[in-house]
Length: 167
Image (cartoon, rainbow, N blue to C red; front, top):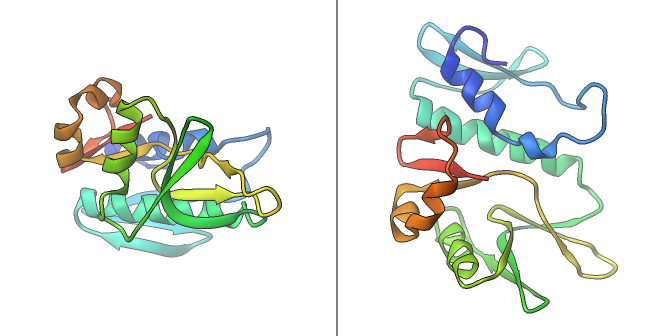
């Protein structure tokens, strides 16, 4: 992934590195390309997304990878939510994009809760147990400023306009 553009290599190496399980070839393969200043994400010769600015492209790639990861987790009930565990109970923060789920879950973590996800809560239908969704948190600048202690965990290559990774 990434071709000759080092920024695309950084995105490819950073996103969803925690979802690699087992050995052998991955079930899904994506290519990131820079075509004369226009970024594209390709799967099996089909453009999944394409745009000119890297921050928007980063967001589109992240969502496409989220959807691919979710497709392989079909036995779980999947809710667009942040989740943490505190005192043995799962806390779910459900809401639309940019409603503050990541900020809330990092706030709970600063009070001692264990983070599970800021994107997709995976719930086992038979037991209602909430499982972690393995990906890096993407923290917007405002959230990072609200919780400066989270910044010490930021990955140096994963800073883009307005947000960064927190593993």
